Amino acid sequence: MTADSDPDDEILIEMNRIGGSMEVRAISAIDGLEVAFTAPASALKMDIERLALAKLGYVRRKASGQGGDAGPNKPGGKRGLIA
Image (cartoon, rainbow, N blue to C red; front, top):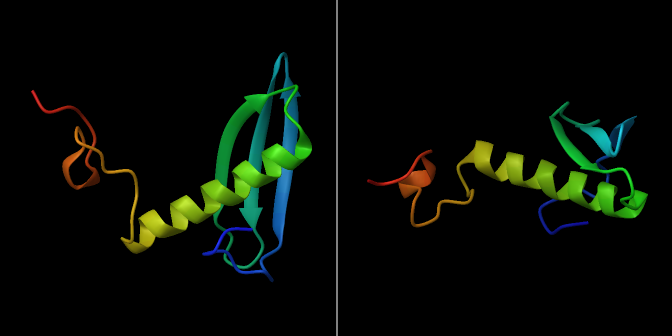
């Protein structure tokens, strides 16, 4: 678990194998927040669960305005490159 996650937050994970990849949806039972991503079909279940938890935490932080990945090419967290 990460520092910003609630230990009582149950996470529902749905995994569907599509060819060589795994489509994953993770939903927080407390607030209904949902994230979706694709992982290799060979990925361990533990790694997928860890990634789902990290993505839920990232989306929560971004929605609350506490962060994101604003890098040198993303002033203020906006999309695109500076030309």
